[in-house]
Image (cartoon, rainbow, N blue to C red; front, side):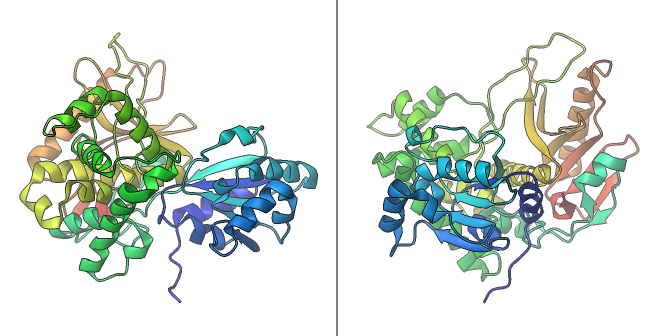
Length: 423
């Protein structure tokens, strides 16, 4: 049996079980939700077991309490197949008056939420899982800690990550199944995931059959527009530009909502700081796939293509960094935002913790020129913040793809290769 590789989410799950009666783990298929939950479960109900699925669904209608019997924590895997379980679990949590009773996993938002009458406030807590970060997959040395940057700006590390290896990792993605496979077989996993989304998984989101070719074209357009705030109307025009059959704005909205419901895309909200001037801040979300390998698969490209097209590589690399920063921020009880204003000032990522601390991050593939551009952008961004109304940033960091060492420059800006970073 394959040895379990510890995830950052393991510690988050343990902590959440101590504070609530039920924990709901959400995230894309294949990212390891069930395996993580199995590590703490004392009993398990697999709702989508083919031999028992219909029986389970029927029992959830007739006597849901029976499905909840078992040693705790009890894992209810793919709970959204039977939405009535939500209220039954909430009721059980209320009446047992004990913490850590249930772990639910779901790779899709329930189609029919009419059967859920209670929000679960006070009984449930949520945990979002994503594909593995480079640190979790063993591809980052972890010499530089994001937590350490917040606490003391400590930077000291090295990595032997090459640009060829980075290109491979971006196309392989953080899918647990692919981590220890031979390289060519590992690359197949993301392509298979993409094919599954196009052919069937996207239809599970709302039980509406979609045009698979239109799904392909939309996912390709979305991949080309990663890291931007393009509106749906632009995506619709882009999809229709080279095809006789157009795609309406309404169809784009419907398909993107379905992709969100199965956690394939995860847009990034805008950051709204206190500024010295009255600069208008753009509030649109930024487009990202949950893993860079989905974008590569949607574009039909592999590692060699990225090496030969550094512009595309830059966008794919940014998605990889955002994935890792999100995983690390979750461990620190934080969130990742994007900043852009009407004057053109941008910040690729703002890691903001609940205690008010935050760090500014620019993402650059590498090279002295690009690093310097990132530094100047960070300094300009820092100067706009009104530190009389909010804290100064805990750190400024240029997160790079290539580079042997992590270091802090004389001006205080940290330069950190992604192959050094951990939570």
